[in-house]
Image (cartoon, rainbow, N blue to C red; front, side, top):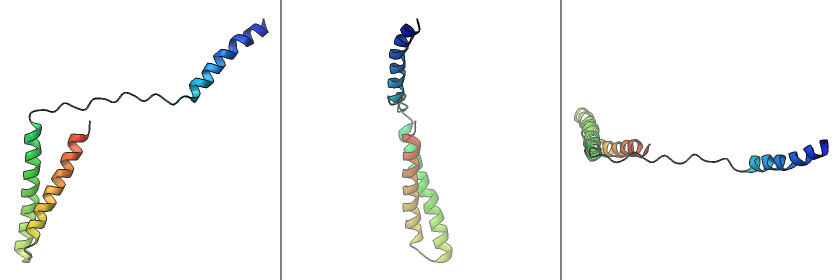
Length: 93
């Protein structure tokens, strides 16, 4: 009886070893969120808001220090940060 049991256990043990060697199954990728009609307005408001906020900060600092280049630097910095925030918010699922 013991011999038959060993013969029956061998294929099962081989299947278990093969299953342990296989790579783990990856979960299926979840679909990204669907685009909404308001996304364009939200992107536009981020772009304008970044330019206005950081351009305004640059203008205030340049007004009090007399360094005129800070206003355009603030606007460029605002656009850059806005683009980064747009990429961060709209590419995450």
